[in-house]
Image (cartoon, rainbow over all chains, first blue to last red; front, side, top):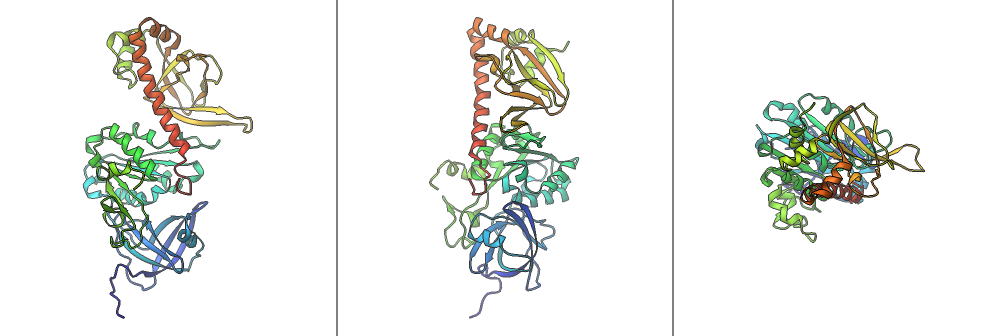
Length: 279
Length: 155
């Protein structure tokens, strides 16, 4: 049987070049293709389907620099069969990769405006590529602010990079933790409390929010209280994805397929859906 | 002496208050600066002041028997208010407040504010309404903390 070379359902083989333990159950893998062809370019916010042979496939956001798509970088938290399977793989192991898929963060729309990035927990991973892009194109944006909330200081993702970004004179970075340890000298409280203290012009601000759904919902409400219009708030949704190209319907969310119409969606389009628990 | 009428009018807590009320409150105001790592008040002490933070960050904290050190609860920062125990019996601080850096606060005499509330129910209602919003916001934030939304199983 002939197989279409660009068939989006056909995984390419990638080798795990390097893996780095980020947190107790979270790790980053860098991947190189086995067919020695280029890694597809991707836009910030897109995801790949990672296939552990014999176990299954999961969608994982790309957390590398879009200007340098090689090697492919994914940060993964081990919470299910496939992600636990990925965690068990060592450098040199082979996995299947399909993608990139999905809608990106609307960076072109943000040009000339203030940009407010709000990340919670592992939600920093899909926004890290945005940080790379913004730092490389800093003049294209107004005030850029990253607000990051983590569970505890030990659960902070990319801690060294956060400290590096914080040292940039033209970036505002604020970090808070839900629960502090005795040695923590920073902010304590949920990430929503940082929004009111951030400096931005609400009428000329695009907000990109990524984290658990409950966190995104409350952040969006807080942003609206700060007069950021719902059309200027974007969130990154997660659902159970299988085909990743809008065929199978597993990731249906109201009128949307999250794999194809998302994962990045304007808040105003899903605001009412977010209030319904049965979807 | 600072122009407290203006400073209070610019503060998010008081910016909707009538000018005559602001003037009465301004008569109760002083400015205090604290060095880093200083205690503004201690848990259990008499609560007699209402603080408006104008610069810096303050940590609300408590302590536990099983832990020698303090337990951080929430950070309060410039633009926010600190403390409502002066408004409610038994007028004792429920937590301690420690500065995380150099901090400047406007201190209002809470006992006099209470008398003002009793003497003028319209003023009392306005103040309690604004304080209720602060208490509601802190309660909602605490509930979000309790949800533990970043825990590994996706909670």
